[in-house]
Length: 286
Image (cartoon, rainbow, N blue to C red; front, side, top):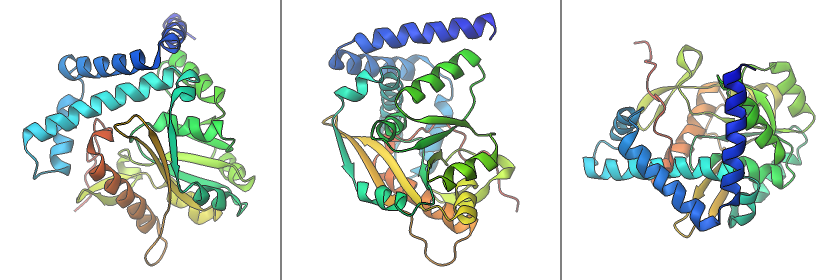
């Protein structure tokens, strides 16, 4: 590690320890304050997020869009704050789990499980719930540019039982993990550039990662769609859903199906989505 990497690693540890010591209510208020500060003072990708919401909900006015965007900043801050406070934050959260039998039945097939999720709600808490409840889950993670931050996040995730693979890891290893009945959790909603498959998201063609569909078609591992959203009461809802295909199973039909499921959730909880991605950046060829 460089000196900068080491400094970042130690700084994140210091911040994490201090956040863990905060009472739950104080941590929640701090997350809201951080979200409000970021909304008002940090312009990075703010206009991109505004335009994304406007594209997804063209019928809504600017006041509505700004309110959704404010909520997004608060959710992102909450997700990050609760993540840094693990494992204490996990112990303080109230969970409700919907359709847990779906992931349990998928695991009983003995072929591994592909858990498809998105950058929605409390996605880090979803990973912690799976790890804490004994599911043999491996997260497919994007490597951080700063090695100190990368190491810190990797160690934190592994502390609650979620093992770690980088996106450019060996595909052979991923198939072996499925063969041993492990679970791969993959966030399949970022722009995949020219490597992706184009499916519709809010009526707009979007280049979407196709790895989840390929893993399923080549390994026979069942797919389960899962998200975590937060109710106004503070309850974290972990949901599991079957991915039901209408017609033949192709990379495009599979990807479109779970993208539709994500869109349905975003329509229900628009402030829960991470609108800062350049979701529609790559254009489909005419």
